[in-house]
Length: 298
Ligand SMILES: [Mn+2]
Image: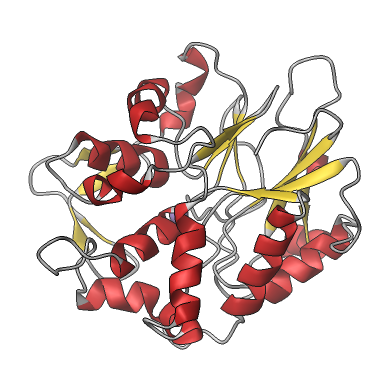
């Protein structure tokens, strides 16, 4: 999809994880009319539309249909999150009949809410997998860019041979993306899950699924502005808490853990018509439901 030059404002929306009602409320907050033909603003979904804890009662199907309709109508863009990426790996088989993403108990529990909603191996499941495969890994607008977890120039350059013109992964390379021996595996890890480093010997932490981990996330946003042509970038993925604020001078994250409870689904508004470079940090650019009560509660 090319960028429409008449678009004046973009609303970047964080990880929804099936919370269709929160999206409906957020769209009301920003006065977005889902059924109007595209006006001068568009939505950009930052990935991780799907998956939630086992027993999740939200409506995955309604959410996916709404986001797909909005993108088909050119009212929105949607990029690939690690959960859509993993969903493709869960569904696709290697030549030997095993799945690209192992069907372990832990992987199943992460994905169960989506699988239950679509019906595993159903036609509907297949259709959503095919749609996920078409999603771009990142978008580059004139003054701002978006990626699910991390913008890294070296990884963006190295992944080019594996991408279609619209920045989606080429059909022939999906199996490489899940092959730890292939360079595409690490590139997808960096862009969709963020760079990590090995913790000092003997140190570890236990993640939210109870798994012991010896790799920790690198806070890449502190040095991002040192990269060549470091345009402001919008990300999700990092499940933040507290009052929405920028991560660094050129990086804003819109994932405030909407997956859980009453946490807000967050959007960040960018005005493309401003002639000067985008200046991140203005808190009024963040939009979310119950903004005033949320600010008081934390
Ligand atoms: Mn994510």
